[in-house]
Image (cartoon, rainbow, N blue to C red; front, side):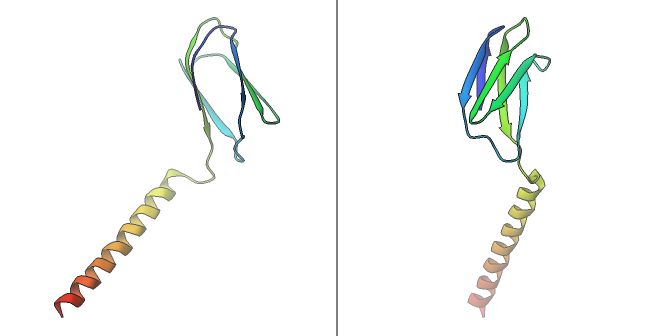
Length: 93
């Protein structure tokens, strides 16, 4: 979820489904002062700093790393390649 141009002292209240493994918060600029409070299904995001925040991003934490996707993709490509090779050999025989 991305929020753009949060003014000084401004706040946003969202009704979102919170991820089971938590979330990561990032801001632009990175030194921005942001206060996030989750209560039930509501999340309040407040700019407590003296400057506008260009972007606030809330991302869900995943229970596995990006390497899981890479290994899965390589495994799938290997299986497809082996099936194509077997089919090609059978057609030549």
